[in-house]
Image 1 (cartoon, rainbow, N blue to C red):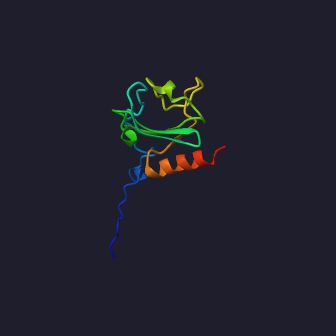
Image 2 (cartoon, rainbow, N blue to C red; image 1 turned 60 degrees about the vertical axis):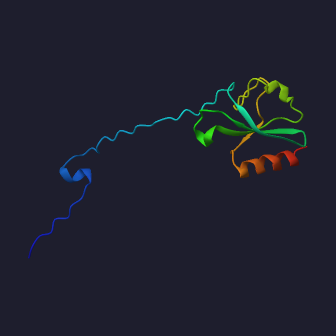
Image 3 (cartoon, rainbow, N blue to C red; image 1 turned 90 degrees about the vertical axis):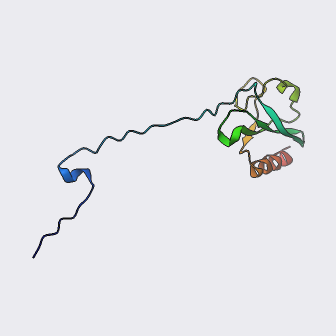
Length: 116
């Protein structure tokens, strides 16, 4: 009778007690929009709530598109020179952001329609 040796690639097979070191390299894509470099692609005011589809050139995720919703009766003149899609407390922050897709736009309009 013969012997059969089963081969495995497990690190313990060679008498090594520690797993091999694997280095992961993470590459970050610039996804921070420049608030002063934007183009308004679409704008609707529904039930007093402004909803904007904005494009930020040079941003990689979602090709730089963002859907932003602002508070009821928000004065869009505050956004003439700068639209920052991030949430903060200075008074020009959006109240919601949505995935920049057809479905995201539908969610934004549904929310605005149903808010008081």
